[in-house]
Picture (cartoon, rainbow, N blue to C red):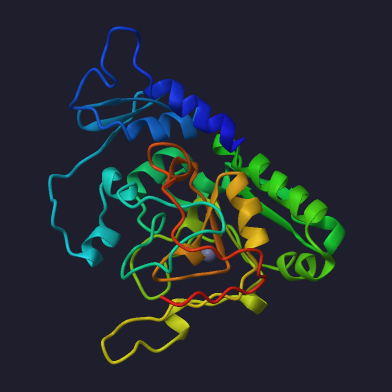
Length: 282
Ligand SMILES: [Zn+2]
C-alpha cells in the first residue's frame, strides 16, 4: 500500500516531458503528498490552497512564519502540518524539542474530510472488529478515505505476525472515536475525527505523566514494541512515540506524512534494531 502511494506521488511529481517539475513555482510540491494520500478526496493544489475534489479550498499558508510553538499547535496552517518530516521504520532519532511530525493538525482540513461536529463524524463511522481472535473489541472508525479498511488490515496483520504476548498487549484498546479535546488544552483531539486509536496502554508512556527536568525538558521514553509500529505505518498510520511530546499508545491515520516528499527517507540516524523495548539515549 505505501509503496503504491509512493509510486503515485512520484508520478504526480514527475514533470511532463519538456517541463520543469511543478511548472507553477508558487504551488508547494508538498501538496502532492495530500493528492497521493487521499485519492478521490484531494484533487490538486493552487498557489495558496489545497483543492479538494468537491471544490473546497483549504488555505495552505497563513503568512505567519515565526509563530511560537504553542500557536503552531493551536492554529496551524496546512503547510505547518507537513513542515516536519515523519520517519517510518525502526531507525529514528530521539525527537529533539518540539519535533513531532503528525502532532500538528489542521482542523479545517480534518473537518472538511471527516465532519465538523460529533454527529457528522459519527455518521461516517463503521464498526471494525479489532483483533477478534485475540480478545479485542469492535471499535468505530471513519470509512472516509478507506480509514476503516486500513485499520482492518492493521488488525489482520497484527494477528498474523505478532507473537502471542504482543497480541495480548495490543488487542486492548483504550480510545478510538471520542469527540473531545486533547487533554489539558482547547485543541480538538484527532480521536474526534475517528482516525486515531490508542492500544497497549499497559506498556505505554505519555509525556505528561512525567515531570520535566529543571530546564523544562521532557526525557523521551518508550517501552512500546516497534514491530507493532511497523504494521501501523505500513497502512498509513503514524505513531505518537516519534514525537518529543510522546504518546506511545497513540496511532493516527496520516498517510500524507508517509509519501514523498513529505516523508523522511534520509540516511539512518540511529538503529534500534529488533530489540523489543528500545531505550535509545539522546
Ligand atoms: Zn490517542
